[in-house]
Length: 153
Image (cartoon, rainbow, N blue to C red; front, side):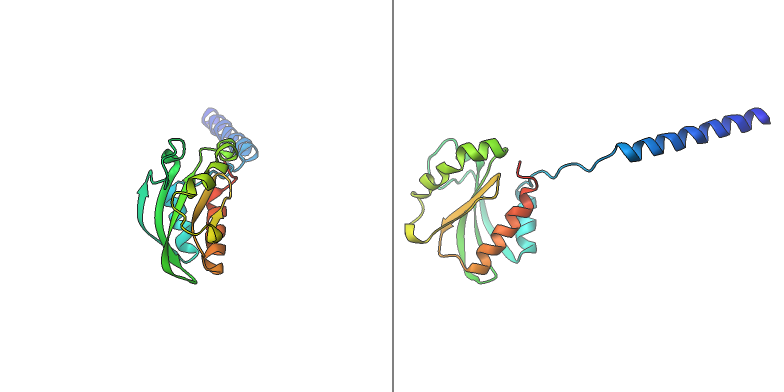
């Protein structure tokens, strides 16, 4: 009997030590950018609806942007008419810094009025399209993409 009791005490001590060690060693993971489904979820929470999504639609023939692009129609808040948004999802902050500037060049292919061109770019995303966008819509898009960006890649 004393032997079983000693074994039980030793096992409990081991469990307590493991739990105590794990508690101090864990840190929450750093937030990573969301995939398109996560982005749509954040847009929905912001009051923006998404329809007619097309993967690979960069709006231009730039072979570097095509794999990063998803185009979709969005509306909500004070944007009553759907607008076509081109979303570029870059792999990380370095890619975003290197390639985000080429989005404006690409946009010349689909923007009909440069004076009302709209763009939002929280790393590692760039969303752009023909405006004007409603101010609440633009703010909701900015907020949703910023949340979806996590730590920005």
